[in-house]
Length: 416
Image (tube, rainbow, N blue to C red; front, side, top):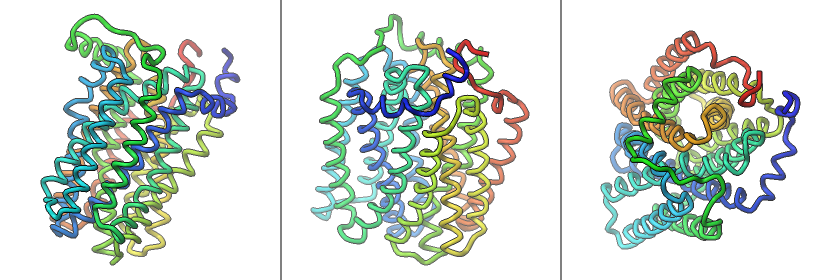
């Protein structure tokens, strides 16, 4: 394989979508991602209206992320021993039931804040499956040459739902309260379940592993210890999730408390970030050459943090919306390259486990949500976002100095 061939743009995107298994897994991700972003906005507005506390809003995001930290590595090891399709189907069935039950509680007038919290935790448990199960399946079907195309396509839909989900969430809150949010969630989860059931029962490249879970986990961390690039990439993931991603929990607070917006305009404001991310993901899916994958990952994080800092200092709706679009561009670069680089730089037999380790790193976000929530209670949401983004910029500068590989050219495994 020549360097030119490895960087050809993306005639491969269409071929991927013509493959039945890839299409089904991709659509399942689209449906579940829509629910995730819809609920994140809707529950943020609902909890802030109910409690008036930015910290309580941040706590809901913490509950969603904790399972990644606690279960991520274990899920990666389990995914190498149990049929991944079965894991995916089980998770979708459970979430269909959870959303339907919460909708029933809203309709009957019996919904309590702790019910919402339990639903958020279970949603987080389902999210644990995304990296070691669903995205690993996408990567296995695509193969190394089409991996960037596969993850870019997945990022396009994920970021499209970042735009669509909050708008739907705000609209449903305006018209139908939380009942509409949970009913739509149950419907989309049910559609995803049907797609998962129609997948092949034995997805390609899945190999049953011998040995216990502890042994598999130890092997996975041994791979990490021997690879500086993987370590540096995971450090950037931690930086993004500690000091970058948590700022989205403050957008509904700033929208309502500082900009004086109602739920639907708040949803549109949050959607501006998704719109920028969608545009960025489309550009990368069409034009991003493999040699720039690491730079996109690192400088995408830089763009995100700088834009979040500027957003914190803006008090005008239009400026805030534009800045959120720019943060979306940074998110697109970071998110598309995150899974791509992990899968490219990890031996095939350890990919599920390394994606599980990636989930653990993403699961550090609850610390960031707690940090920004406490800062918001003490100093207000805008100052909390500014402090958090500033800390992240310092940490990213240190990471770039310690791991210069983060901005070196990327090639296919075995190429120079």
